[in-house]
Structure formats: C-alpha cells, structure tokens
Amino acid sequence: MVLDLATAARERDIVTASINDSIARFVAWHASKQPGGVTRTTMVYGVDKPIPGVLTGVPTGATLTDSTDTTTALVISSPGTYRRQRFLRRVDVRSRGVRFEECEFTGGPTAHTSDHGLLQVTSDLFVGAGEADDVQVIDCTFRPRALGNRVNGFLGWHTRFERCDFTRVVDPFGVHGFNWWTANGQPTNYPAGFSAKGCTWHDLYFDAADYQSDGYTHNDGVQIQGGDNGVVLGCWGVSRRDPAIGYQPDVGQYTGGRTLSNILIQANVGTPTGWVIDRNWFDAAHLSINISTAITALQISGNRFDGTASGRDINSDMSPTDRPSVLVYDNTRANGTTVNVRRGSTSSQDTAPTAPAASSTYDDATYDNATY
Image 1 (tube, rainbow, N blue to C red):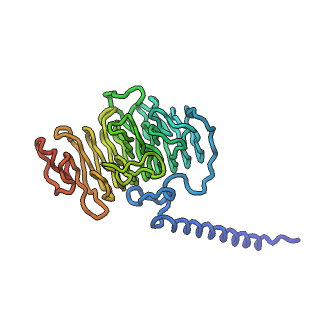
Image 2: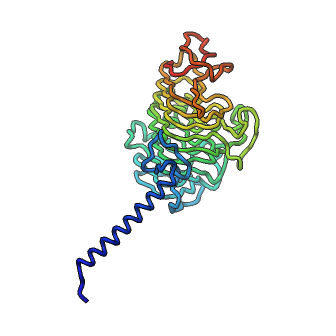
Image 3: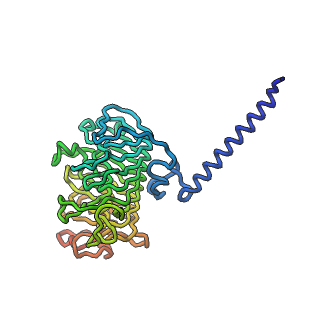
C-alpha cells in the first residue's frame, strides 16, 4: 500500500476542523445557557449577577476526590494548589501561598460546639503578608454536612474568594483581621487581606442560640469584625434561612424566613477601615447592611436591594462624632428608588436626603450621596 501523504494531510485537516467546530459549538451552547451568555471566564464583577450553581460554586459535572472523613481538621502547613477536592473535614490553613480551585468544603461528620469555619485562615504567619501571599479560593462550594449554630463558612483573614457559593451555614464569611483566638480585643489593626468577588450566599442555617440576646442565630452574610481594606464586590447575598432545616420562627424581624443581615460591620477586633462594598445584589434580611460601630473610610456604592428587608436596607448606629469618612452613593432598590442610610429608630428610610447635621439631631435624619 502506498501512503499518499497529501491525502492524509487533507483528511487530518478535515477531522481537525470538524473537532474544532464541535468544540466551538459546544462552547457557544454552554455560554447561551448562562445569564445573558455570561460564562465564568467572561463574568464582570459588579455587572453580571452571579447565579448559584451556574456562575458560582463547583461547576456542574466536575469530578471531586474525597478527603479523609474525620472530625479532626486538616492542617495545611505548606504552599500548594488543591483542585477538585471534597474536604470531608474542617480545613485549617497555616501557610501562605495556598490555592483552592473547584473544591467542596463540607466539614466533618459532627457539628462544631464553638465558632469555627469550614475553612479557617487565622494564623499569625499572615501578619505583613501581601496579596500574592493570600489564600486563593476559586469556584468552590461551602455546604456543611453536619448542621449547627456554630458552623460558619469561612473564618479568618488574608483570603481571596471568587465565584464561591455558600449555603446551610450561619455566617458565610467571618472576617477578623487578626488572629481571633489570641488577639480578640487587640487594639492594633491589620490589613484584612480579604475580598469576596462574584460570590453567592443563600439558604442559611437559622436556629436557636443561647449566646445571642434574642435567642436566635444572628446570621450575617459577611461579618466584618476588624481589619483594613477589605472588598465585597459583585456578590449576590440572600439573607434568608433554608426552610427545610433549623428553627423556623415567623416572628418580628425574622418574618418571611429573613435572617439578620447581608453585611455586618463591627469593631470586635480593631476598627475596620477602608472597606469597599460595591455593586452587589442584596435580598431580604432585617438590616441588609448594618454598620453597628465606628468606622473610617467606608464606601457603600452601587448596591442593588430587592426592597424586602424587614427593617432597613442600610442601617448606621454611628454617632455624629465617629463618622469621619463614610461614602454612600448610587444605591437603589429594584423599583428604582434611592436607598438612603438610616439612623435612629424613628427615622424613615425613604425620607429625602438632607445635609449632615452638626449635633445629635443626626440620629433622626437620613442621608444619601453624602460624606459623613
């Protein structure tokens, strides 16, 4: 048999073109199934609304490898990349330069009895770390197997999240800004090293909690307790409980399945400074964004609220003397109305903005598009 190289080359080119065409058509079909044709690689944070299971979390069809199933935490003490792993135990990162891609965090077979995260990054080794050293968490799912009122998604600092999905936890993100276990109340503040971009949280675990004043878990999408210069950008937070689990009281601020807040800012570990809460989508909650402490250099901009908060979309408990540089602008509801900051129990959230007051009469005023 004589081999015709020219014919073989033509046949090869035909087969190659056919394969490339099939791949292109599959990619186009897959993109057409995303909202507006958006894919994870083309998604623009703050512009394209993240959809759980479509644009966030472990991609559909990914095959995961299970870790050891145990109540003992997996301690990661050296740099490295973990891809398509299902962690059947709590993960404690104690090294810079760790990356997780398309992983699922389920925690162990029993619930924690003290505050923990499915992923924890609380090591002092991150003091002075730059962004290149921070833990990276990309396209991951956080969904605990064992439910409890102390089970959170993430706890710590110096971690960057992109396109991750959180369900069935009390607080998806707990950002402390320094080693929570050894420095609670530490007056020195540190960079939080934290960002959440294009992430989603929804169907949270709500239950009775004897450590809270009203006896219920205070679910917060992102609980900011300290640290500087964190970013929450282009996320979709739905502050509602999962109706199939936990406690289901339909009373007071928790009516309609609401939980407490999407963003909580407080100064448990230093005063948070320089945070940016930008172009997110926030649904439900009681106080969707709740500033419960003094803070400096805070920006709340371009956020979109669905208008179903039982209390306020943006609440501030700051006094007139501790609000030096907070910027609030371009926040709207689904019906197009402007969302104003509200302070004081009797003020109307929809009152037209006024100039910042010079005295405590600020307590009953609302503001928008103002530096105060």
